[in-house]
Structure formats: C-alpha cells, structure tokens
Amino acid sequence: MTIKFSVLGLVLLTGCSTTATITRVSGPAVEAKIVGGDRSDVYVETPFGGQEAIPRSDIKDIDHPGSTAGVLGGIVTAYGALNIAVGLPKCETEGAAFCTGVFLPAGIGLPIMLWGIATNAGSRGALDKSPSPGLRGSLFIAPTRQFAGRPNTPGLSVGGAF
Figure 1: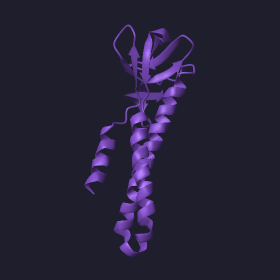
Figure 2: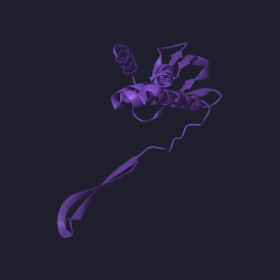
Figure 3: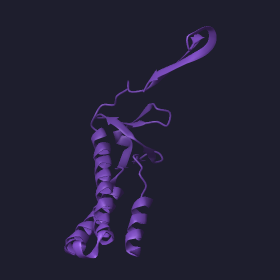
Figure 4: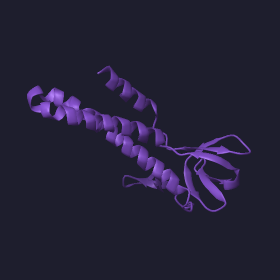
C-alpha cells in the first residue's frame, strides 16, 4: 500500500504545466506556451496575452510539456494492468474493497498518461501551425441611465466576448 501512495505522490508532484521550456543559444531559457510557428520563428504566449517571436536559429532545445506525466502515467497504467491480470480472478471472493484496489492504479494512471500524451502532442503540433492573432477576448463598460426598468437610475452595463 505504501508503494501505491508513493507512486501517486510522485505523479502528483510532477505538476500539470502546459508550458514548454525553450533553451536559447543567446539568452536565458523561456518558459511559455507555444502558440504557433513558421519556418523562421516559434511564437509563444506572453504573460500579458500577447505573442512573442523567438527565432528558430536562436533555439537550442525545446522541452515540451506532458512528457513526464505521460511516462509516469504509463508506468502506473502498466502496473495497474498487471494488478488487474493478477487480482481479477480473486475479485468475487475477496469483495468490493479488494476489487477497488485492483482497478485503482489503472484508473489513476490511464488519465494521467492520456493527459501527458495529449499535452505533449498539442505543444509539438503548435510548432507547425500559424498563430491566431484574433483569439483575444474583449470587454466593454457602458454607462446607463436606466436600471431594472427604472428611468434615470445611474448604472453600468458590462459585456464582453471571451
């Protein structure tokens, strides 16, 4: 049981980051989400919602997100599959608690592995797609003179698209 909790703790400590670490030749590493790329540049999302271009010639290495979660989730899933193969025949005689323990590692490992694979594939796929500049939200605030059907009641109307 201690091993199961140790593995679960290790998986949880890997974090759920969706940013790539881009090691550059002429500067410090950049930790950002890749939103696009072309032949000469890789575009990353800035902390303020904009985009910044990093020349491909300045990129030494890219560590895409999700690889650690994919590997650790795969290990836990493999252990879960082995656990099911060994424990399934005893499920009827041992009861519900035993059966839950038989299926739990696979139930935890599989979603973590799938999330890691999907996140990694999304980051790698973003390198070859053009960035979308028009996907920002907008917000507007307009003064009003009517509120809840009552005229001459000052107020604000807030709206937006996200």
